[in-house]
Length: 147
Image (cartoon, rainbow, N blue to C red):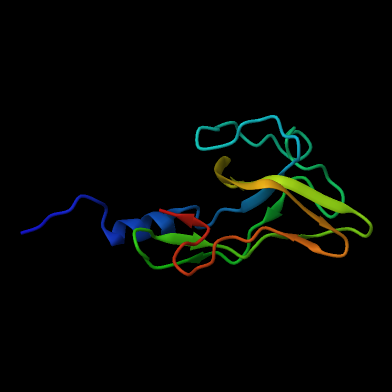
């Protein structure tokens, strides 16, 4: 008989499905020149629009507080993960403006906790006309959040 160590697919799917099923999840852009360090150990609460020093300022199509993620989908276990996905958050860049950011943070507004961060690997910017879209991993098994 062979035994392997790990979680069952059923538990992975339960973990993914349990990730804030009725919560409001917001995508919050991090400004160019941010001074904070954001990652798994960051536990400071989001202080709210206008008081998070490293959030992109309101304007150019962005409003502090970020965008609410829509159309939550929980997928089946694929590979080693159960996953949750949402539509890609997007901001329409205002006429004659440029919207720039270095990262996005995901905030669970219902339960007051950070979920995670995605570093863009440099400055991402869009100038009007255009949309600043954060392309979340698709539901081909990876999803936006994996358990």
